[in-house]
Length: 363
Ligand SMILES: [Zn+2]
Image 1 (cartoon, rainbow, N blue to C red):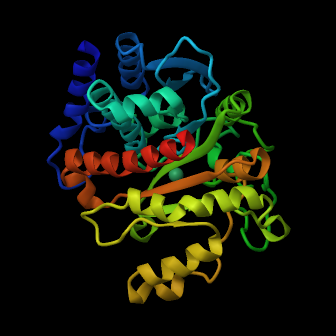
Image 2 (image 1 turned 60 degrees about the vertical axis):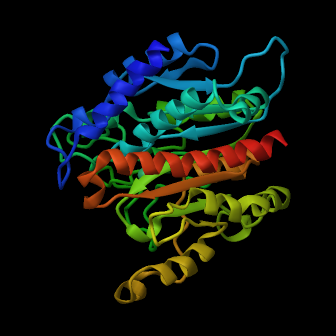
C-alpha cells in the first residue's frame, strides 16, 4: 500500500539522527502540525478499511485537532468497546506523537498478515489523538524556545504571558487558587502549570472531553507523556483522587487491579533494567519511586506524591467512571543518540500494552 510506504518514509526520516544531544533541526526528526496533517491524510486515504479521521475541534490558534478511529469496518453496527489514547497533551513531548504514528504503522503492517490483529480490530476500536496540543508543539519546534521545553498551549493570558497547562485544565478537582502546598503553581500565568481561569477553559481539553462524552463505548483512557525523570518510567492509573474521593469506583478499581500487573509487564522495556510499573495510587507510586531512584535521591521523594489536580486521568476516572492510565515514558540525552532505536523500542513496548488492553476488552 502506497500510504504505508509514504508513512514509512516519514518514519524512516526520524532515524537519520546520529547526534549525541537534541538534534539541530528538530523538525526533520519530529512531527510538527504540518507534517502530521500530511501523514494522517495519507494514512486515512490509503488505509481506509482500517482508519477513519475525525475533526474533534480546533485549537486556540485555529489548528484542527484530529482523532483517528482504528477498527475493522463491518456491515453490522456494533457497539465495540474501545480505548482512547492521547498524545502530546504537553507540547514539548513530541516523541509521543511519533509513538502514536509508530503504533498506527505497526497496525498497518500487521493487519493484513496477522489474523489475531485483524480479529481484535473487528471486535474493538482504538481511538488515537496523535497531537492534542498542536499550537504548543509548533511553538516548541519553532526555534523561539529550546525544543522540548514548552509545555502549555498558546492562549494569550496577558500582555506577556501565554499558555495554559492542558493537563491541569480538566475538571475534577480543578485548582487554580494559590495554596500553602502548591504556592502559585496553578494560578500564576507565567507558571508552566497554569491551570487556566476555569475548568475546560481551553478548546483542546474540551475537544477531547467531548470525544469521550460522545463515545461512551470508549472504556479506557491512556494519556501518554514523556519526561526526563528516569525513575518515572511507568504509569499511574485509575487515579483515586484525594481525601474523601479515594476509591469512589470500587468496580473500576477491581477491574484495573485485574490487569495492572500484566499491563506493567507488557510496557516494560526488555533492554532497561528498570521494569515498567503501574501503580494504582500516588501513595503506592511514592513507595515504588523511593525504591527505584539512586540512594542519594531518596530523601527528595516525598512519602505521598502530590496528587496533581485537573488532569485527564482524574477526570476520566472520577467523572466518567472509566479506567484511566497516565503513562510516563523516559527520555535522557542518550535517547537522542539513536532516535530510531529509541523510538522503535518505545513503540514496541507500548504496542504490547495497548494490545493487552484491547484483548481484555474483546474478551
Ligand atoms: Zn507531559
